[in-house]
Image 1 (cartoon, rainbow, N blue to C red):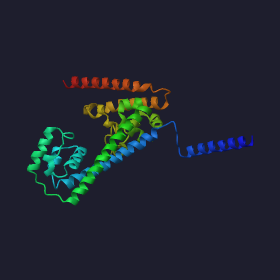
Image 2 (cartoon, rainbow, N blue to C red; image 1 turned 180 degrees about the horizontal axis):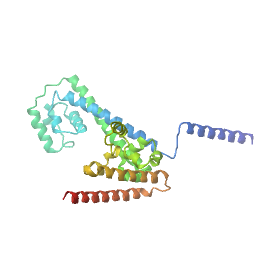
Image 3 (cartoon, rainbow, N blue to C red; image 1 turned 90 degrees about the vertical axis):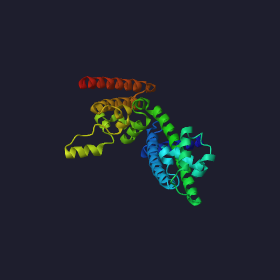
Image 4 (cartoon, rainbow, N blue to C red; image 1 turned 90 degrees about the horizontal axis):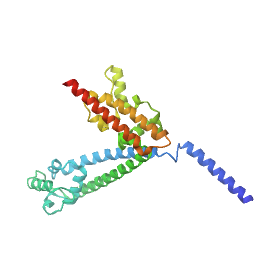
Length: 282
């Protein structure tokens, strides 16, 4: 009996310490929106690093084969091609059919014969190949993170993701601090998330205030007519808040079906606004 008493006392102390530390660290085991925040931050940092590395690769390899960058635009494909061919002289004896279509390979062969680039030293080539392997590994890791983010977003906020997409939805959660904080926001605040500096600048100079911030990256706003962008952003921000509240506070998320219905409603409203514009212009 004494051993049981000691065991239960230790168990109580352990439970109490875990509760205190969980509160101090603000850790909640049943909410994984913090993981989404960490993931989108890491993706943004990776994109910055990839842009810097891509610029350095372009500057460095352009001394040897500048025409390569005008033929191929995707930097990960360029890195794969460089790692495979090493120098332009090896293009005609290197197999690239698994990386590029035939018409691009033919263009590269033509360009390599009349290239203005100079010969490359072995030490420089070794550094360039190392940089290419870094770019390829970073790009693969970024793709893995994007797939992970997509799965996580559909798990914690399926309705929000149905409207915004996983990346914009994750950035909205990041900006708000948590999914629950986003659910507590009003639509007009969500509408200008990411454009606060522009808002205060406009208020100070007494000019027109911005109509959208992060939500501009959603297709229905970015591709819309300039005259109706403001109206669409207002409608969209209201739907974002609605779906965020369902995901954060609702007992059931309904597998994202509410978000899909709201997205269809937004698309119908855009068609209606476009028809009004066409009638007004005619």
